[in-house]
Image 1: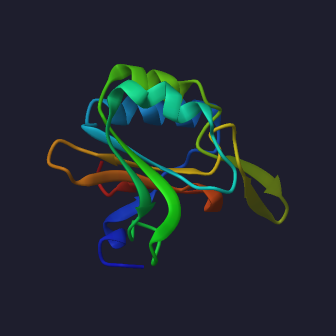
Image 2: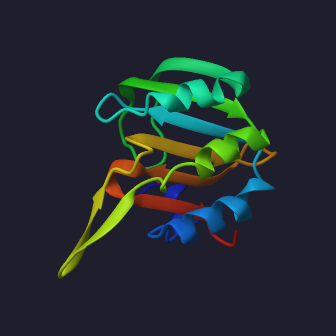
Length: 143
């Protein structure tokens, strides 16, 4: 874990209610939302849903929270904040599904697909990030 990643803690998004409450909580602090679309399990509707708010689109993504290496086959969509982006996010089941598999849990894709998300505040600081295929969701400590 990098020093930057140590500034974050787990946030529980196991249920749709937790997911929706978290979106409501983080929305007012959001300035930019970054979506990293991977080529494994797609979300074909997301780029269309946020198209009006994209300020950067880049093929190939550099090192990010939760990843030690760049993702050259992935696409980054950086969007400015708009209520419609959060409305689109609220339409999904969640960023991922957590499925009880005693004695542990396992993660599966939701209808959001294999898309990672980073949310930045007005200073450009990351306040939330996911590694969706791992079921990992992190929020800045004290947020």
